[in-house]
Image (cartoon, rainbow, N blue to C red):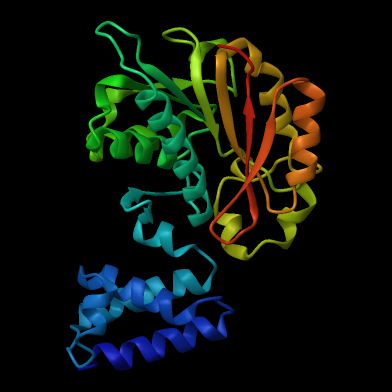
Length: 302
């Protein structure tokens, strides 16, 4: 009967030969999924035996990964901002760099809500997550702010043009206990269908920003994700430009937007904001790796 160490070595070798960028980690995550334990737990017991059924299932999952299917889709879960989110081919797999967008949004909301006392009856601070996909950003925001006691002071709207993706976002919101804080709307960018309770204080968006020609150069795993969640047009910023044009219609005076971009799109994104929103300050914020990651624009006023 094979043990964990031997099984991981064989699985890792198979994935290495198939071109996986992280063969050992992939094997550990898949075996943990099979036996129902975190990878740290299986690594702590390398000699533990595996049943024939577990071995058979692990081998099947390794072959799916060897064919290019993302580990997150195979496991059906992806960790993001400390949360285990359900993922499947209905939406893009959340990336670690998007956590920078969450951090910036949290700082913005906390700053606004703590700046001055909020009398009873004050309308909630409204956040709109455009192109929510799996709901990673909005669920992380709602969960974090709710735990910090801001639940009653913030209201969220999450929109996506894909009804299937939005259904996945609802599932994640329900599983993390924040569905009652979020209005879900099927809408294309800033379509009027998202305007449920008046103007928005903060727009956040992780829109597709990969240039069309670059899609062919991505690892095969990306081919399992929805193309419409990746393709940002010729230079990657088509949807960002469309959203910028409509911001004056939905943002309150003094409101702002935080838009994720590619690491090489900082200057182009700022230029796009200056052209479409003259007089609106625009700034690029880096991610944890120091790469340009988020374009912020501010509507003058208040």
